[in-house]
Length: 314
Image 1: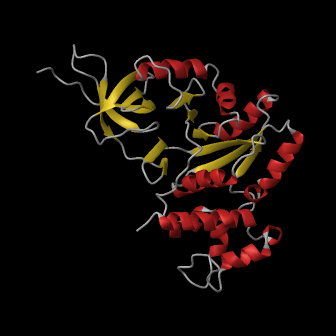
Image 2 (image 1 turned 90 degrees about the horizontal axis):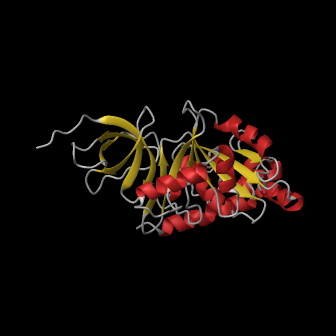
Image 3 (image 1 turned 90 degrees about the vertical axis):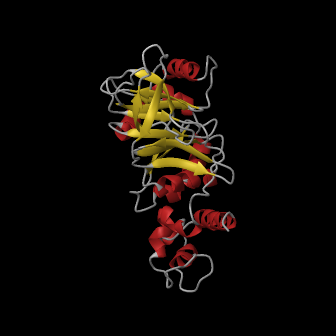
């Protein structure tokens, strides 16, 4: 029987199906598959892997996924879709055009809050003056949430001011591991290629290696942004359908900073913030955002989501 090699440490930098690309501490990359049917590694996971015995190919096996600091994922009625693990922050890129969905934005923010991951919002296409002004106004509750300290909203014009935008983004990304999300048309590919020159070529090479020669853009990829490998960017698809079925209805308020801020004033500890007397949230909605309260659009997102999440449970 061929002797197995020692376990080695690595980080998952790409995945497709049950195959992963694992990077060793010295930068070598190896295709691996998890041992056992239930084991599932995601991009960002720190793993222990093993090389195959001599003469048994190149593909290694992931023997263990180390404990995660966090896992950013979505969940609908049918399945759970993990994006990435062990993140420092999530950068959500939206644009002045096409008009972004505030509901989809809020869902991504809530998923980040639930895992204790810092979210950053970036609004692209500031060169489109009037649409950008409208979008910037719609983001007012997010720009002022938590006395302006909770969510950063970065104004970008990736097509026209790439050098300025790159410098601005690097102030927030330096030394961190950041997942980038964004709907179609937001400029996510432009952002990735601006920050990681040659990313599209690298993506093609990884996709072909993982998927038997087929090119796929539906998988998640990890990119190093510096030679020292201290700053990482993770590109992932899947912003459109963002289910939050893993979050209990009563947990929702704590994941929305503007709701949570006023929930402490509620008369009842188990207040749903929908109809109870003495509810600090409902009072804040009546006062409105100009008086330091809650915007109607944010409260509607909360109440709609509370109802949706309540219906998914038995």
